[in-house]
Length: 212
Image (tube, rainbow, N blue to C red):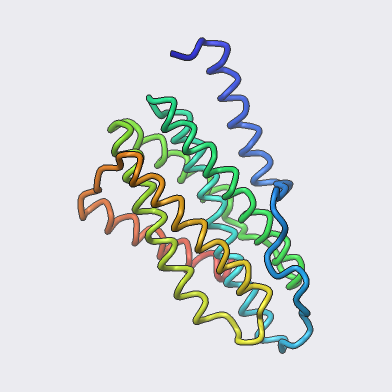
């Protein structure tokens, strides 16, 4: 079991991660997908639509940072804690990529990001109370729903927005891998009411973040 000073360090690290996430200073460890693609073929309306969709993705990545942070802090098993920490590092790439893309499209993150972060952190902590298998099951279901969302988004992005498409495609591949890792680690399936509630919460986030 971790010593008290180590746990204090983990909570300090989680607080620092929250500040960095909400301040928009997260750095990417991997190159931005599609960085070399030209970006001057969309109309103003298309750029506005693409920016709104990427704002939804950025808000989702804010939630991912909160969820993984809370689940890593509350996990009972060191292997589960490490899985969450590793996934959070890749999700930080997604956060940085979508933030940069918003800048390129002349837009901004969702004004509700602090709310998304606080709510997601609380949900992540609560799911961990049921044990690590339920903790991992929440990851599996979250990543499955996110993968579905990103697949639909590829159909909604403007046809000429190859830069955003490259980012979304890589994010989708990463999410699928994170879900597979959690499943392999022993995730327990979540009951239907929980899965349904997760989907409704995600629908609300997408509707609000698209506009605000």
